[in-house]
Amino acid sequence: MIEIEKNFEAGEEMKKRIIDGAEFLGRKTITDVYYDVADFRLTRNDYWLRQRDGRFELKVPVRGVKTRDGGIDRYTELESDDEIIQELKLPTSASIAESLNKQEILPFARIVTDRETYRKGEFHLDFDEMDFGFVTFEVELMVTDESEIPAAEIKIEEFAKSYGISSTKARGKVIEYIFRRNPKHFRALERVGVIREG
Image (cartoon, rainbow, N blue to C red; front, side, top):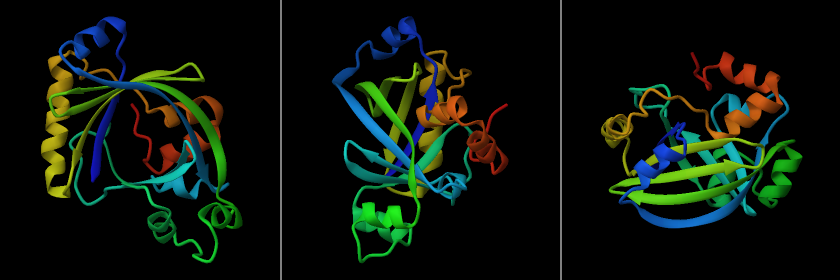
């Protein structure tokens, strides 16, 4: 599956409007630990390796389809250790944790998120509040094929426009964390176009 997602700013009044008539799916606390090499090799290639509540996941960018909107992210998410090891070309003779350590792919961020999740029609809505004082709202659609990406992006744009939030910009939580905590890392991502602002 391919995730098509965009982050927005949405205050309490806007949130009430957005979730009106939506199905509440649950509330949970998530702990994410993000990994990279000291030269930011993974994130500079828009690869986001994290350990979420003890399980490794890797978001790999979809590059084959031109985006309509630079603020919309498109990723394939790998959730098995074998897939991640293969994608990152890690040694298969050790556990993923041991392989990462040997390759000096080490934690650079630990983020605890309180998340409320809703479904509204085909849209998956996450309202996140992070332990470093940041709040964001994410609209997500899942598609099975790259050919479906442009239509999904249009749907997200139209959903946002219908609530008057299409012009608001917001960073995702890990980008905001990097912005606040590691300007050198942030600038490195800007230079290669992983972060598109302004």
